[in-house]
Amino acid sequence: MTFTLTRRTLMAGLGASLVVDLRAMAQGLTLPTSPVELNIVDVAGNLQLTQRAIEAYRDAHPKLVSRINFSKAPSPELPGKIKAQQDANRLDIDGVLTGIDAIAAGAAMDMWVPIANDFAATLPKLQDIYLDGAWAMQQQANGQGVCVTFCDAGPVINYMPDRVKQVPKTAEELLAWAAANPGRFLYARPANSGPGRIFMMGLPYLLGDKDPQDPENGWEKTWAYLQELGKYVEYYPSSTGAVFKELGEGSRDMIPSQAGWDINTRALGVVPKEAAVFFLNGFHWVMDAHYLCVPRGIPQEKLAVMVDMLLYLLSPEAQAMTYDSGYFYPGPAVKDVPLSMAPADSQAILAEFGRPEYADIIANNPRELPLAPDRLIRAFARWDELVGSNKVKK
Image (cartoon, rainbow, N blue to C red):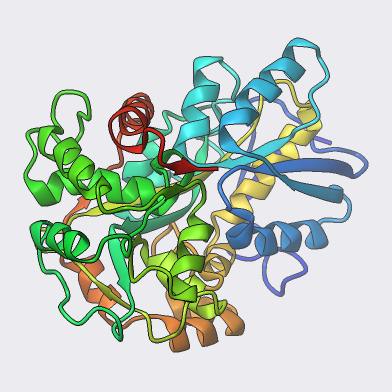
């Protein structure tokens, strides 16, 4: 069967036309003549956003996919595992859902199929379909993966209004509040926490540091600030969940957050619904994204299915599912996917736990790329050395 792929607006079996702009593949891949079993590993928490759409693709294509096995793994461990499997010709992972960190680590080992480059003639023109921020994040992947979800992450600050009577307006006032309320401010080790690293990467903009993209030579104010703030932080958890749990239980009053974590933890009841947020003067959004990557060495018929599935994941209908329960708010990476397209349960959650002010804050504050992966790794190391030291709790 000659491999042809489609740009889809809806999948077969989901109620509309299957084919939009049919294109033949120059690479000569062939779709399987019998259904394949796929193994997809998530190292970014992305399945919460995309599993529903991936399963919808599976259900609509029983002649292509017999089963999809999902698993989760720590991001730092996966590249080495995949490389070992590739070297032994025993690869059993067909797709990886990841942030930019594992993409960079894998690219250094020549581990990924450069899917955005090799299949550019088959995929939609990504610059045309992506939101501006998602396109900027896609460029950071250097073609090694394709962005499937996007958010303007933070840093947002969550707090309990019944316990914080004077809300800080500046980074200096936040530091003064922490000094006056020792042990009541908490954040997780940045290497283990999205909100932790977003807080760290957002500070250089708030403090007016020399070069917010250079943690080694441009963060003099940031490192001094974090060291001073650390005097009033009891310890640094090794997970984001532990931080929000302590806020919800009342042992902490204020924590760095992201828009998605703010919405999702209140929707799940981890944090009381009345928890509030604030943004410090001079705030810049630090963006975040998740990607689908494919390891080199998977069978060609599986690669064909992975690319076909990726086409669906970029469709507006699949993207609308990524609103989920607000975890990566907003979620969609592509343009023209309003909340009204999302499943009813997502709309209900965001109607109750979303914040109307987010739309205005997203529209009217600068957006910044996160640190490039090599610089982020160096920032983690410096934080561990200068700030975390012996205060990280495992």
